Image (cartoon, helix red, strand yellow):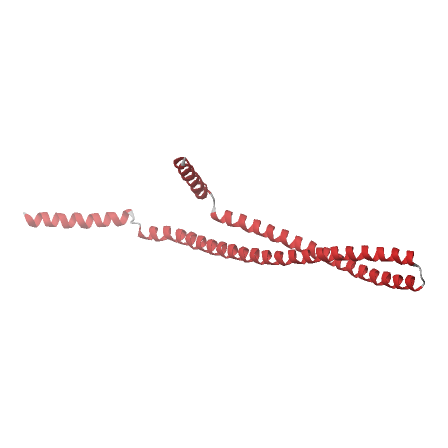
Length: 186
């Protein structure tokens, strides 16, 4: 069983290697940038939405706190007028409002925690995006240099290329030297 797993991993590694050689690194980097920008946008949108919700919840909290104060005044007034049944109704409403207030306060706290986590995630994603952009910049610069060198290389080779006329002149010199050597040897 272990042999099969090892063979499977080896085959997967070979397939990944082949795919990597087929991929254009610049295109891969550009795709990574697009994906990171999409993630950043999604995180920023979620954070904006959470902040808006938090603002609305804080408004509701403020309204509920005012309502609890008003109910407390009504309870005291009802008790002072010996209206116990009315006081009990106001007490019920106040208790309901306080429970609702506590629930919303918990949601605000949870929401605030989520916003803090998103800030951290956003910071990490921005950092990773900057790293990818730097790698892309380096890669593009390296490719530009390679292209420049490859364009310059044929020019240098052409200046090193020997023309037919140069060959003919050298041939005649060698023939003359050879003939002279042959005649001196006789």
